[in-house]
Length: 195
Image (cartoon, rainbow, N blue to C red):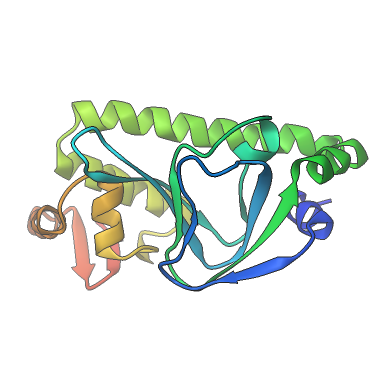
């Protein structure tokens, strides 16, 4: 059985969240698994210099695992609906019951958590070692792999992408223009072609 389908089946209800509304913030109880049915959720924090930094985006059919895996845990980050979003929650007890019913799901969820941790570690390294243009180009290459296509539409706004990369929107525009001039990409609004 598909992991997300099994979790959605065990969840209690669906909640509609308007764009821009906070879903959780630091200090809120983190006692449930969150499943994004549709829309996008941006998980972010603030750096020491008070700059906002997007950690990751949760898209349709993705889960935010930490609340279901750890007990007596408070949220450390912020989550905000990036667009109109529908989410389901699964309380910790119901999550554990679902794992007992579908033990193969545990391995899939460990893989999901491992991928997210690896992504965050890689971002920490690239943020300190690579220039903003290199980080941007690496992200665009990752999307090429994700979409299995050289041409795709950016799945986030340019403002969200700048926050994700830890740069200003002006720097993002300048770096996109440079990558375009260097012949590495072709840019048409939010449509990107890797050359």
